[in-house]
Image 1: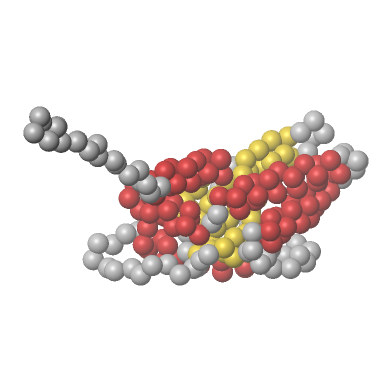
Image 2: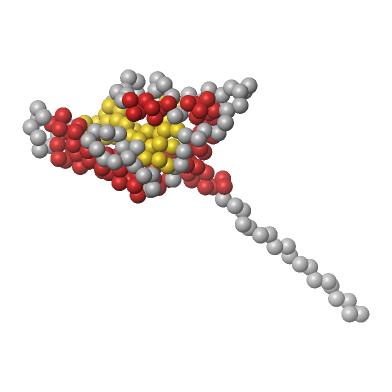
Length: 218
């Protein structure tokens, strides 16, 4: 899912884990599915000719609201809800926003000015973890952007486009490629590995004491 070298990939994953709580990712995934479900249910009442357009609008608003709530719950201080404006939160060094990808078409996505500016923040992450240069020292990233991506490549019983997958993705600074992509489900497994690797060993070995054998003179 990514062309990042193995060592850089693991370091980048640990960076994300350090700044993005597991519960927050789970909430973002639930928010996406919840918004999609509500939007499709309401859009199904429209006439067939209006249904695709209505579904797109209604799902956007419902998903924005549920995503905004998830960001607020986890202290990410999201930007205010306002029409079609992008909702952006902040967790650790990362800006967190959402993006739809129709039919796994990861290239030629519609790129708004705000998304471009957010992607530019990943420049130092790209240089440190992806385009690694042995002769250039790159400082630790102090900012970056993660997109919570909804993959819409299904169709429900009412003929409405349906969300099938939620992913975590880091765009390259120029938005022409991706530094990292993973399904939320797969990325959540990394937290278990991380917890296991940092769990302290609190076991205290107890040495058996040997009593001195008594003799007849004792």
